[in-house]
Image (cartoon, rainbow, N blue to C red; front, top):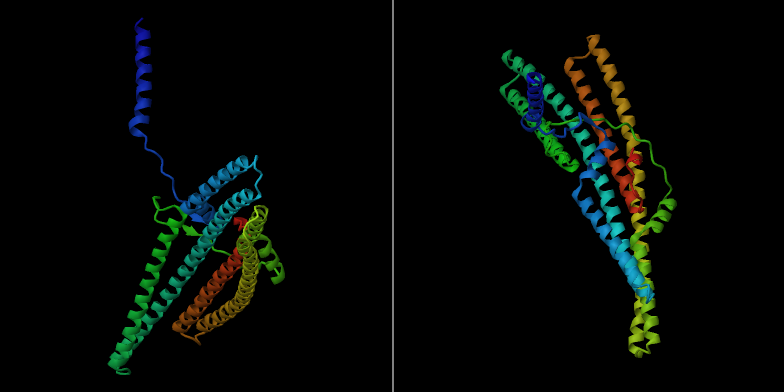
Amino acid sequence: MFKNIVSKLILFFIIFFIFSGILFGAEPTQPTEPKEIDLSLAVNLALTNNLNLKIADLDLENAQVDYEKTRADNLLTESRYVELQGDLGLLQAKDNYNQTRNQVIIDVVQKYLQLSQANKNIAVKDKEAELERNLLEEITAQVKAGHKGSLDLLQQENKYRNAIFNLEKANDDYQQSFREFKLELGLNNQGREGFNLIEINFPEIWKIEEEEALKRAIENSFSLELRRRQIELAEVDLERAEVAASPALDLRKLRNNIELANLNYKETQKELNNSISEQYYTYKQAINSLDLSQQNLIQAQENNNIITEQVRAGLKTKNDRLSTEIGLLQAEYNLKSTILSYYMNKLNLQQLMGQKIEEGQIK
């Protein structure tokens, strides 16, 4: 009997401590930021957490419900006019969702690449500040030796202060951009200070001919589809008016409306043609700039290697090497800038073509 009581007491305390740990000791686990993020993960996070996209998704769902209700209500009357109006509401919601989704991706890609660019800018400004400090030390020594005047020293001090200011500003700009990027990804309430961004390699060029781009744009354009539906609605209006033996002036106005709808269609098509042509030209220029920046980087790397060897041989100074390192970093920065321009022009062209941008197709 005593053993049973002891066993029950032991069992009671075991259960008590287990539940005490759950109720009082355990803390809810907080989601943590990844230690590093690549572009694909950044896009997925934004698509998951973006509020505007969630709103567009719900609007699309409601539009689908309204569309189904309109179809059901129209089963008896089989009105082509009602059917067209229902179609337009759903098409508008689908286009709004796709446009919103594409814009989320474009914004994330832009901020991601801008951060990479800003980080490289910090490296440039850091080297520039180091060089100006070295030159200040040299001029200070020359002033003490009587080889330089106080004005030379004052000018170099100003250059050094400006370099420090530019470095601090580059750091501040990066931190501000990083905070905005975290908000974009929905990571604003996380515990870590930051994460590393994985560098994007030189992009594989997306190839498309202007004629093909225009063809896809015409096929996918919501604006053109809207104009087509407006033409059909105007034609249905006229048919109904003719059946109802409407007055001649009313019929004349309805015929004018058909002509206006056709003219609007042609004008929209013309604007689309011009937009595609302009964006395609800009995209081709971005590709050319990309190639040029890559060649400039190769040249800067070769120049840096030569100066490094000359410094080892005693033919150049450490400040000469710093100058070439700055030139190399600047060339890397310029390449990042052209990569950013390439992606922005590519994605904007794809959006203009009515293409749904997929995460896996960005690189």
